[in-house]
Image 1 (cartoon, rainbow, N blue to C red):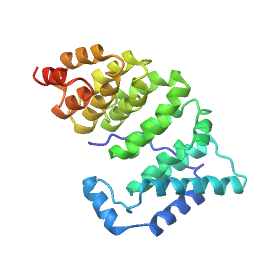
Image 2 (cartoon, one colour; image 1 turned 45 degrees about the vertical axis):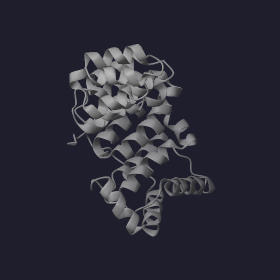
Image 3 (cartoon, one colour; image 1 turned 120 degrees about the vertical axis):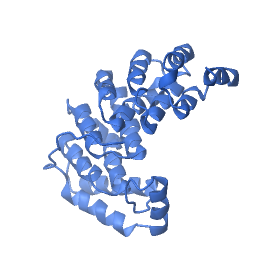
Image 4 (cartoon, rainbow, N blue to C red; image 1 turned 90 degrees about the horizontal axis):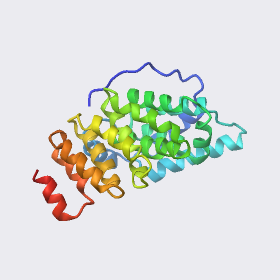
Length: 257
C-alpha cells in the first residue's frame, strides 16, 4: 500500500538507552536463515533479524526491569516517543518492539494519561506501519485495550477508516476484532466496514473481513445484510473471511450472489 505522510513526531523524550539496548540485543540475536525466510514471507517489505516474538517480548521485559531498577518511570510522552523511535527503524522486529513496549500492561496504564493517545498512535501508524504484523500488534494489543478501558476512544479510532492510508484503515477494523463478539460496537463496526470495504487493496479488505467474521458471532443478520449490500466491493478473499464462521449453506449462498 502506498504510504501517506503525517507530520513527524518529535522524539525528544525517547529513552535512548532503551533503544540502544534493544538494537544491540537484536543484532546479537540475529538468525540469518530465519531472517531470509521472514523476508520472503513478508515479500521484502522490511529487512529482518530473524528473531521470534517471544524473544522480542523478553527484550521488552528486560527494558522494563532495567528502568525499575534504575528508578525511572515512564510517562506517556516518553513511551510514545520511544515507541516512535523503534517503529521508525528499518527492521521488522524493531518495529514490533515499538508495539510490544506500549502493550505492556503497566505501560498501557500510563498511556491512558495522555488525552491525545489515539491521535498519537494514528500518526505513528501513518508514518511507520508498512506490514500487517506491526499494524495488528498496535491495533489488537494497544488500541483495542485502550478502547476497552475507555469507550470514548472508539469514535476517534473510527475516524481512521476515512484516512487515505490503507494501514490506518485496516487498523480501524482490527482494533475492534476482539471487541466485536461482545455486541457493544455493532453499528460503529458496520460504519467502519462500509468505508474500508471500498479500498480494493488486500490488507484493508482482510481487515474488513476479519472484523465482520467476529461480528457475525453476535449479529449474523447484520453481517449478512452488509455482505449483500456491499457484495460488489468485496474482494473474494475478504468475503471469505467475513462469512467464514457461518454455516456452509449460507456461505455458499453468499458466495454465489
